[in-house]
Length: 121
Length: 139
Image (cartoon, rainbow over the protein chains, first blue to last red):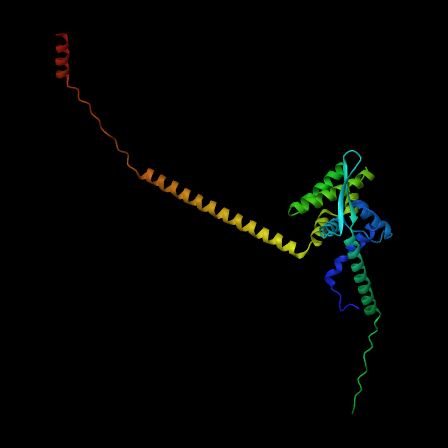
């Protein structure tokens, strides 16, 4: 069992969602945002302002790669592809996530019962 | 291309306090996404784009929220050095301007105080000598 969870790693949720979707195939930015909405039954939407910086970070760390593909005559799309190191990283953040949710569940289900003080007189 | 798309994309561009390489990269990808939506919905309005992609200000806030703290420090450092260079340049220019102005004023004062002096030049023509010279020539 892990000693403690670093809350700074909370931003990993977006990474986790993106990497998990990219495990199913190569997708471009707009498609990813649409898939997140669809897969979460419209419960989650990641704004473009968060989506692209998260993709850039994953790309800079070598977890995903990007490839420009020409669609039609002029339009270009950047398709993102998960790399083997990205799959390993996904496993790490998935276990972190499970650890955190379990820990939070423990806290939420905890019933605090103050012990009655006995007065010895 | 939809006019509403242009208007929306322009307001997002204007909302950025800086427009460095990284912002350009994001803006280009963002435009591609908005473009994809606009192609799917050719009659979309500005409000519709705002509902789907967010208010321009919120997009910029979201973008900077995703950044690592060291990026903030780099931006702050750069802003500080730009401010320092600008202030120094303005101070130097202002000093040079003041020096030039004071020199002009002092020269003008000197000019105003100066007394007008005239140089009297008198030409004396010795007529007798001239007649002698003429007389010699005729001989």
